Image 1 (cartoon, rainbow, N blue to C red):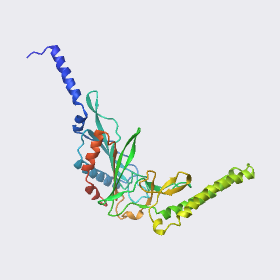
Image 2 (cartoon, rainbow, N blue to C red):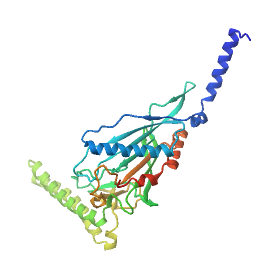
Image 3 (tube, one colour):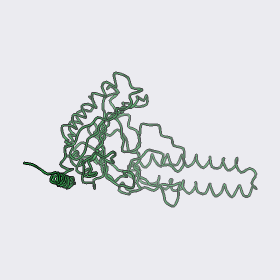
Image 4 (cartoon, helix red, strand yellow):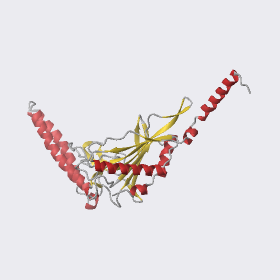
Length: 342
């Protein structure tokens, strides 16, 4: 059959319209994704033996993820991450990162986005959801809490500690962060700071801060009239003494109250003071400190002694939200837990 030039152009036009209609959210969600290995992390400062073991462990993590998750509507960009050994640490930090790169409709074609705000990290011997408690803590200001802190208190769910919180994803976008802390049975790699320990350190910090403030005023304002210096000293000392009085009052609480975990927030009416609050307060800081007794020191530095899984992203985005849900449902936490101490 002979097709005229006009007829052929009409056919192309109809085909193009059909394709443009096909590029939709439902089509994107049904499009199988690909696995892509990304940039390899730095390996400097790691012994050859430790690095070889860590790469094997990261490879095992990747296999666990592969077995439980099939990307749909996204490409799964993954890579291993390795950190130099630190003498102060009982185990090396290393892990596995995965970025969900969504497919989008662009000019009637399915394309892979160039950026994403949704990711998965599975790390050994590191707590990436909060401050790194095994790093040196510089504590110099009298108004600081004096310890590192977390925003949420993990809940034990079937031998795995878990919590969820809202988080910023950049450019004003809010999303969700799910965290699982996989540990040896009934143990945590950190300790909660008691109210008494917090108050005693706070008292020492305020006392030292008061003396430092007095010395600073005396050495800095030597040309000012004595009456003016005395007024400045009195005002400054008064603030420290008021904060110290609050600490002393708290220290008179019953012993069973003082042994509870310190959950604090800055006093909005007094920058030198803290108030005790509850973990569900959005301004709460749950104070923590290292737990050196957690680690089995007979194991190699490259052994995973606890594993943290963090899944965060934009659940409101249909493509990324489905990827997060599929990952949660498919990831085998039992297999990850079985890797501890190996």
